Length: 238
Image 1 (cartoon, rainbow, N blue to C red):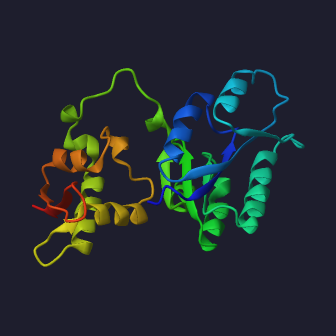
Image 2: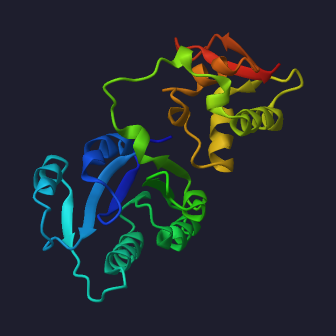
């Protein structure tokens, strides 16, 4: 993925815990350069002092949005309007929509129709329609750095899940050569298109290769790369 892409980061303050802000911004830089960073909320509400330093440290602009009615979420409307204004300004290559609210499903779809990359970030409770409307969706729970992390070697195949193993297997079959080998980077890219929320970190692995090794369902081969000192990794089904 091109990390030189300019991204607009729009955060729904109603749906994202403040404890994840730092890790979230760090994650976003893996996909591009967050040139626009805005968070929407009613900042006149009490108990929001903890947000002040977080926003200053991460250069996030707070956008004041009053709740004009009891049941209508004005924050959603403000984010959607700003997103469309940014889209038409042609200043960014993609958007990062941070929310666990399905109300942003149509917005994500519309931005992708316009040819923009759409990264979603939200809690695991995020409704699936919003998840699959994005090019990539990251569950925010996996971003919080834990003081005690499980060792990858102790994670079982059952933890990874039969559905995930089947997804990897079928994707390898989709793009493999006559001998059954597929370039791992291409496998990862196609998996992302099939299931935007797929992330090895959801299962306790920092990278896809250790996850694949832990399943004992795939063969891995490292090949020399004429253009780099780094090896090329290929996989096939056993």
